[in-house]
Length: 476
Length: 49
Image (cartoon, rainbow over all chains, first blue to last red; front, side, top):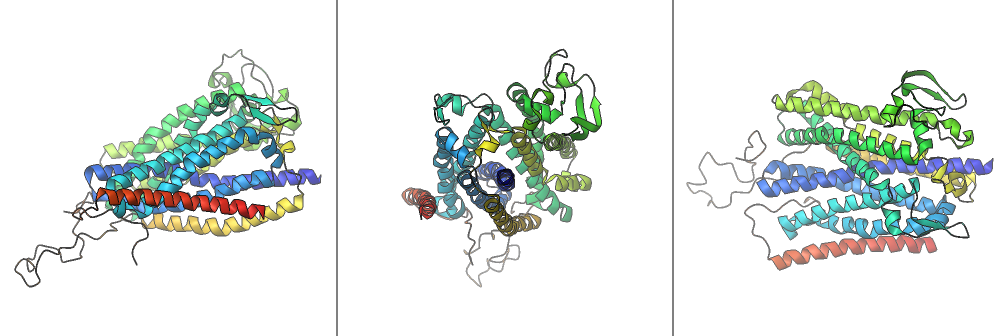
């Protein structure tokens, strides 16, 4: 019983810390690319609105990047503290992937972040843009290695089992580019872009509800609408491909996602209901008969394995997987709807004056994060009882530690995270609520001698004053 | 107090010579790498105590 408690607590601890962690990379991956686009547009057009937007969002990027690094380090340490058997068994395969993440992505980001934040005047606009691009590429390389490692855990390939039970890579190409990896990388990268677009759109809409003429927020809202109008439908297609891979490689996860209790052909498509693991049925289910197989992309007569194909003790927490999937898909559909609505308002003149659209954007602002967390719950809880599918059970991967030790560190994490990340998140929210604005004063007029006729000219702004801005946010 | 995050140079501001800018570019990049390595090896040393 003590072992079970330690296992459950270790799982709770990992779930808690990774749910916190994933919020920050989801944001910083998208935000880094957004910053690169903003700076590129500023370089090409020299429009002040892009510079101001860059200077505003780079502060939020720096904060979320920092919190992402701090919360990410905790994950690695947990491999050693709570999951030492997992670390021992899988290190020869997964260790190099995580090391490559540090060497190629993390160092790239950490090196050029300094130039991004402190070096614009020192290195000049073009070299600064290079640094921003390198940081953006670094965040995507980081996603590459982490998704590669996780995809291998979902569907391990290119390895051999040693006599002592450890694993060793026999084909690195198969390890890194295992069959589920490319689609999952694309799914996560698009999720990050979508999450960022929604957050940027939500923050801009919040400011525009107060001041519909604010040039930076007008521009950012239009850019965000354009982004999620394109990416949300694309994500639906990529998500479907990801589902096809689950069907082919992880049938137990599919059975949990769709609450297929019984093996058979012509499965019904469950829409909503309350899955009951003990009774092996879904209470109050609303389902469409005859289309389950169609949605899975197989003929009606094809037998799809239900949960009854596996021993009950091997089933994942069906209700959690089932509902996380539905929340994720529901939010995805809402994002598509918001994209269509926003595009329509852009074509009709101005989304910044459509109060209900702005309110919807504010409401949807954090929903990208919710969808990402739900998606990862589907991925990770749905893989149970395995930590490495078919090779290592979660129950066998835990460290020989007591429940007291794990609960003490779990409480410590909850307390520290509550203070540190709440403070960080509140600061980010305060910045977002304030919105982007003209931060830099206009160039000072210093070529007129005091008392000269030029200095007395009434149509010039006084030294140090901001020049007036046109509706597009640029100075005249 | 000046902003911690540096903005772009003004349009009419003369740029430093390319060699100076490249020196800053690589200097800041290497400083970032060294700072990261210092924290990483520091944490590792802490674990071995």
